[in-house]
Length: 229
Length: 229
DNA sequence: GGGTCTATGTCGCGC
DNA sequence: GCGCGACGTAGACCC
Image (cartoon, rainbow over all chains, first blue to last red; front, side, top):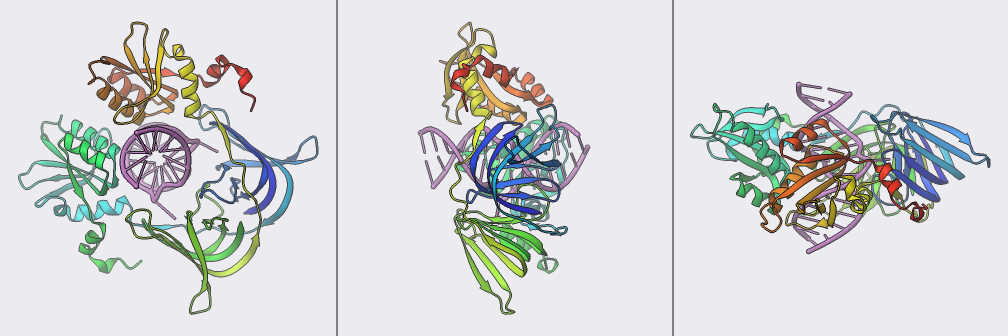
């Protein structure tokens, strides 16, 4: 990892073209050749960057100024990406050996929600029983396929935040599943920790039941002994 | 902007919980208090981070180790975000005054595509005439509302890359617009620089016309004198 | 503040 | 490899 603080101008050409006027910025060059151009604000997203795999070539312009050219292979049939960094003055330049990072451990995303609901489908609707998780269809897997107390098929779509496109997704599944005479009729449940008003309205309009999920309560139902982390 | 290279362990709790074991990483602390934890690989996304507005508090643990606690207000109704960085050894620590960045200038994003197509709707379909850009509906704005040579309404959805969700989006608009007896029937055109096969199939299935857009050619049609950049 | 849409989105999984 | 959905998505824009 090389860290450079420099007055520089940056030009990107690829999926779009972008330009950064001359100013002082931080340049981060990672071991894989990827380059990040950061300013002293914004978010975690750099002003400009080049993703690996790519190569950095350090050269000089006619005027003798330092110029880095970062190139990547074209994503598909588009123009190849290039990042040109013209350096006027270097304030800092250092190299660091970081080694390989052990990586991030996550907990609490949608997959976990799906696992918990698969274990406790009754919290969505009393008497609901799991048939299978990730039930395959031609247009993608249904999160949970279940049967209710009367044996009627129920497709469950799980989201952390329930928005309109989640309802669209479940609608597509239901449309397809209801063409199967062995399954039909199939009802839908849209389950999420939080459901936006418009999504709730659209779901209601399409006969889909909304279910709010309490993640902490579900985790409480779960056996806590196997969660040491 | 403060740049620190240190052996550290990071724990995040907020919308999810995440853990980074002890290893050497780059810590970037921006002027607004935001913190980025980068390893020597991956992409521009940090392993972990805290977005502004947030505050960094530097303290020491019982063992005398340095610990940074970064806190942010809760995003909405969730638990407040915290990032705990336990520092074992500092390899590098420097401060830099970057000043305010003039910011990024972009060209070639969807908005430009929309502007160009609004000026030259005939490139989508001979005789097509613009009614208005960003035509408002209850579920969001239609990119271009037009009329064809016969006076029939045509809704145009523009994407840089045409994928299945873009077709879904246009379908929603068409369904709504066709309920309006003053407009109906409304046809759809799905315009993009590149259209994925699945999107093309879905569009065809729904009677939506696909139109490939040549951005460079369109820009050529445009008056070049007002594009100095 | 809520709703919607864009993004050089990125990331990860499954086929 | 592509397709597809999730993301601590973040940002911009409009009402």
